[in-house]
Image 1 (cartoon, rainbow, N blue to C red):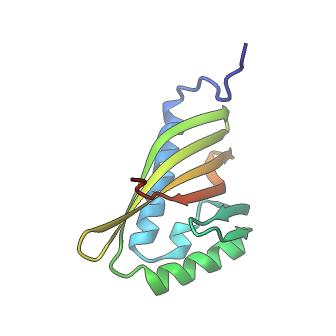
Image 2: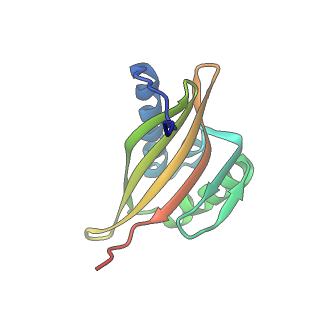
Length: 138
């Protein structure tokens, strides 16, 4: 029999806390504040952007987000939807997101993300992010 990758975890508090992490990311984006945006990234986090840029460690990720948020985010609106939350263990979550970024007068760009979060001492931390642009395949 083929095993399931995720455990059955109906811990509503963990799900709520994880959802709050993504709300905080949105807050940081809209305030163009990388300190807020990055407050849940672990020191050894890895992020791969939708353009394929790979950054390792909080310092590199924070530099990237600071430059992007301060230099390129003016006038953009982001909705970061946690579409599914699964657990590999009670303190390890995989979150699939759909990020919708509104540019200008209604031009919406989307990317799909896979986020790995861990819980340490009552706080959820982002350890890895992989983002991919969503394109319309006709």
